[in-house]
Length: 363
Ligand SMILES: NC(=O)C1=CN([C@@H]2O[C@H](COP(=O)(O)OP(=O)(O)OC[C@H]3O[C@@H](n4cnc5c(N)ncnc54)[C@H](O)[C@@H]3O)[C@@H](O)[C@H]2O)C=CC1
Ligand SMILES: O=C(O)C(=O)Cc1ccc(O)cc1
Image (cartoon, rainbow, N blue to C red; front, side, top):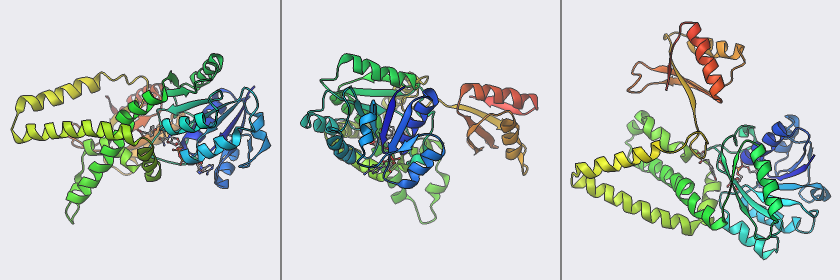
């Protein structure tokens, strides 16, 4: 039995707590968050056993403390926790940038008890209400141990992360900040600037916004993320982000030249290379590209069609992650798209609907 403390219990803190609860029901989970409603909701749904105060002697009971508040507060809490934690306690965080917190850890002489953490999973939503006990499933979870953490403590923590269904990967904080600048921070800047570009180019009738197709929607989902969080990430990792932005701008300029000069072969190569590399990305571990379990179903255009299907699935205990009609070139007439949480649910759903003579497409 272990005692786990949380400071900050939003999307990520809440998801880690719920996942620990799922896989280690005997663990004692304590949490502090700034908003009392969050703590009440967490107690209510059984994600935590008891609440903590901002300053509380019970932090000394914890084997692990997860700092899941915005990063500047996490650093403040480190300062406080230094003199409170028991021997052997490991403090970890969930922040998207690792350099600044490691710098604080070094300055505070806490390198023996800090292992940075970053689950490479999340969403554009914030807050405990969006947290779930499957957000971390199959996601890489990067660990950046302080220089003096004993090896057995790193192994123990890595095993805890593994037991939650995530894939632990140890990196230095420098490696982490460069890699995430490329695969997480730059994509958020690209999504945001692309949305802002379309907003500026659109006319008063908002035709662009109205007919924005699947491609635009796919690559701009993350433009709905928390502006406060992304402002902080850009400031904290500004050097790496600036570097990858430079490289990206060079590629954009090359693409523009190819378009201006009608260089068919270069344009073909650009799309073929990106397609091949994108197709080679392993989607069995979710990383930042979630594996999706999706079905498309022909339904007659009548009131209640969607409700009937949702009811058929619900009666068999199959949970739906997302449901809605889509229209695209492949399905011009429109089909019902249903997204499931798990492969097994998708397979059971397919069998059930086919048995009732629905036409089901698996992609
Ligand atoms: N949102 C995402 O998809 C991901 C976020 N992260 C990182 O996880 C960390 C947390 O992000 P989210 O959970 O998304 O944010 P969130 O906004 O959903 O949750 C933040 C939590 O911190 C609490 N909080 C705010 N100020 C506080 C304070 N002064 N003291 C104590 N608690 C305080 C809030 O009440 C809330 O419970 C961030 O550092 C972010 O970079 C990491 C991976 C993915
Ligand atoms: O929603 C998505 O796809 C994300 O990219 C979420 C995300 C946000 C911040 C992180 O540090 C890691 C993951």
